[in-house]
Image 1 (cartoon, one colour):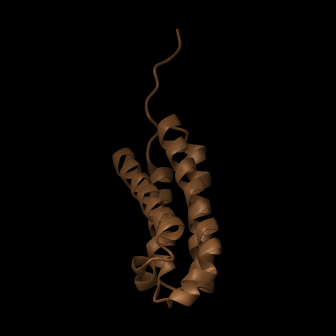
Image 2 (cartoon, rainbow, N blue to C red; image 1 turned 135 degrees about the vertical axis):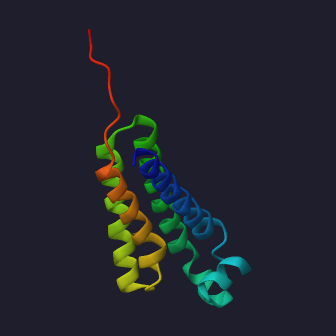
Length: 125
């Protein structure tokens, strides 16, 4: 289960890295407009807001990487809960598919982290 939790947390971090790139660099680009079904006028007028959103996704990625590198379960749990809350909020207020693309992977990773056995540590002598 530890390996599954590791893979799922990495997957969530990669998903949010993709969100960061899309929102910060491709929002006002044909790729972003096609993904979000926007006109050039809409994407141009909302590009600053999207870049801010992308930055927040970057903070989620940084927190998940911190949790992975440090091995701290509490850090992974905190940032996965943040991912889930953001995904649920986005799914309820912006686009329903956000529940599946953000909240669901975060929830699966959180469950895996919670049910994974902690790494065995050697007793201090």
